[in-house]
Image (tube, helix red, strand yellow):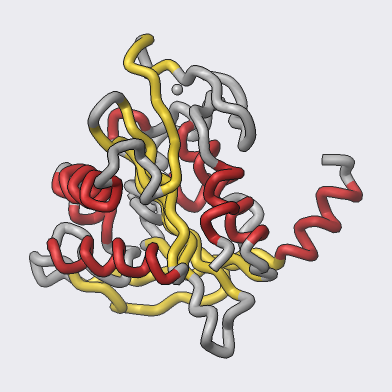
Length: 239
């Protein structure tokens, strides 16, 4: 499992730039609506630097899950993410395959981190989680080259660039893990998430695919990005 070194490369405290409001993101609805699934200048993936909150302190730090500082990091991360999830609107979570407000789902997330099935970044503001990301890949399946990206950002930090910074870092994790195709899921009304994942193309629309606790069903859109094609595009435009 080489995911540990990849997580370290993308971690750190990161400054961010402005992005469309309402992004929540695929780990969140505005995944996008929630995922944004997640405050200042453009993000970097290398050396840590201060990242002020919307009105100054507290600073935000982005670290790989399992490496949050305390000796009992696994428990620390799981508790922080569980508390974070409880504060998110249900609609922000519909793009996820499981409801992370359930304790057993958080336990499964921790187990998947240990096996390398998932790479994850956790953004902390002092002692609370304010955003999470995940790279999900079945390395034993026929689609081991495909990585699903998930992103969730606290509502009060959406539209401030954190989602974009975390998405860039998460894409780096996926690339370093060998992914040649990236996917993201969201409900079609999560306009912030769709904007955040600019460059991804619509690949499928699953009608009536998810159902909220109120019994209402929602469509689920699947977006995809071909890594080689994106690299070629960036090279052509000198990005």
